Image 1: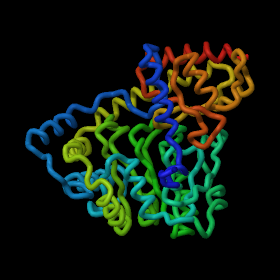
Image 2: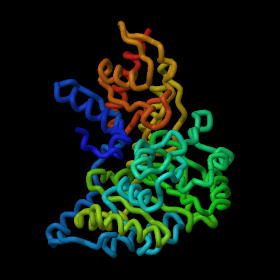
Image 3: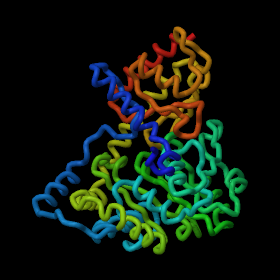
Image 4: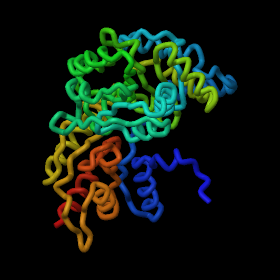
Length: 397
């Protein structure tokens, strides 16, 4: 007898987590696996943030907090958004959640009804489509090819909109491609959205600080877009706080209140200790964030040089985040022994078992011809990973 709800059968396990699980299984057998599958900075959380958490524990700040977050944190987020993003959200328009993923799910649950369409540029972060499906929505994909630097155009956006379109979700800087929408590109998209005020733009800006080419631009800051935008952000990437689990959303008041109402029934507030740490992160120096970005930029150059030396791999030069998303379709049809590489998943498994390098199939991100490579790892590991990948790919005939 099948007792599992149908909605569970309609979604898939994130491939990022699945590949990390396979890598850990090999590691448990004593195999030296270089994991480039998870989007997790390898840096330590800044000391001032850790100190604030320790102080919160010692001061017994260990009780339930307001569902949407403690007042000083919501104020710190509001001030940050005004100062750094030119986004005029008041504290009561902000909901603090257990990670940016939680914030995204809150928004989708608050906005999307059964049968509503949600436009998602492809490639996209693995969970966007599954979250939409989980609430009965219909993901509508717009393909952004490598030739466009994995970014959609206003013309493509306009063509995808229908009477059922309820929302649009994207990330910039982007996971998995590392592409960053310029101010001009965002302005062209916003002109389309303003013709369709029923569409809510969900802007995932979790990689905001990891931007190599200049200032980050928030689409909600563009003329006429604030009331049509939900801004998602958090501390995991820019502040190396993945395990602390804190994200937030800033939205028109009615949406923020709806998200707070939903969160009250699911998780209530996130950790009180983490919230105090987050206040320190957002009100303190950005030196540690800047240093991490400098290191990621150096690693990008290292990885780009190595990838360009491997025949058959085609990639762009990402301008943010810490990923490459190369086209590897050249290797489809090639063999190793009696096994044929037919898909990106096949190639991922081959490289895991032969090169002991863990990557993620592009199928998980909506592009079956690609792989995602995270370079959130030490320089020496990246150098060794390139050596292993090149050697393993040369064996394919």
